[in-house]
Amino acid sequence: MNIQQQWLVWAQQMQSIAQAGLEYSKDKFDLERFEQIRELSIEILNSYTDVGTEKLVGLFANENGYQTPKVDIRAVVPKGEKLLFVQESDDGKWALPGGWAEIQLSVKENAEKEVREESGIATEAERLIAVLDRNRYTDDDFPYSVYKIFIECRAIGGSFQPNMETMDAQFFGEEELPELSVLRNTEDQVAMCFAFLRETGRPVVFD
Image (cartoon, rainbow, N blue to C red; front, side, top):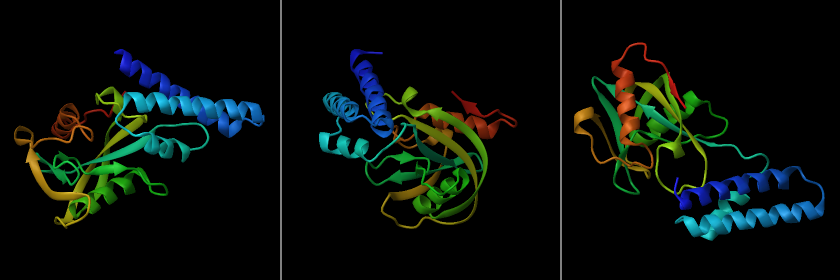
């Protein structure tokens, strides 16, 4: 771990401590100190990431209580020996359908919703493939801790529908992959999904 990554880890830990302290402390002097710790963590994150101060304040100020990882759902939809990918509107690259999990929806419901919204294809979520810590596999300066959940989904109908999030949806084989949006899914994660579908009885992957 280089010094920049170490500072980011320290800033994330400071933010977590400050958030919990602001939620559970009653003493006004303690609350003031925890607010100072939060502000200092934002200054550090602003120095070592491309996320601006205003956005960082918004990201952290909207959370209360004990800090926990966010959840990113990725749907793995096979068709023969190919998998469904969507072309992201923001960078033009390709990813397994998915996004942040929404409250009041189960993991299964979130996976099916993401596929439907991003590709127009209706699915039935069937199997858990993996639960991974995003920041152990993606080398960037993302300020949040994130769990990525990969779910196998069976296509049951539908076709691509224009939408605000994606430009296209296609099935690709492992040897013909388009340019991946690696902040959403890495090459190793996609290879893991292909391997899971090839090998009957393969255990769930988690770290």
